[in-house]
Amino acid sequence: MGLFSGMLGNASEVDSDELSKEFENVLSEDEQIDSAYKLIRDLIVFTNKRLILVDKQGITGRKKEYHSIPYKSIYEFATENAGTFDDDSELKLYTSISKEPRVIEFKGGGEIIQVQKTLAKYVCK
Image (cartoon, rainbow, N blue to C red; front, side):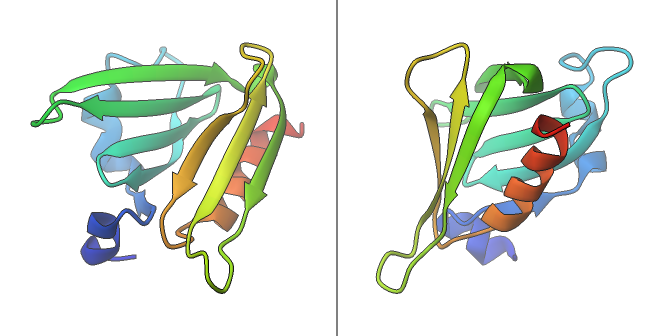
């Protein structure tokens, strides 16, 4: 996935080393970034301990909201792949934290299969 895909809203994988500086104050001492995906400005970050959803807000995106979801709180997840006429995919997370699933949209299908594999790696232990 290239820069153009990221601009259109497609999920594109981000190099974990690039995020190290940004997340140095967010991660615990023994926590490491496994993989990360960018959705326009927002991020989905998989660590060895939790899933972090980063919601960049405002015009500049300098204001950020970090949602930490411990893997142990995820009891179900579902993915909906892009179809012939519907180019978008979705990830639905069902957690003990909320009654409603958290829905994350991937424009153009993106990396939904890899995201699902990474999530299964941590949730289905």
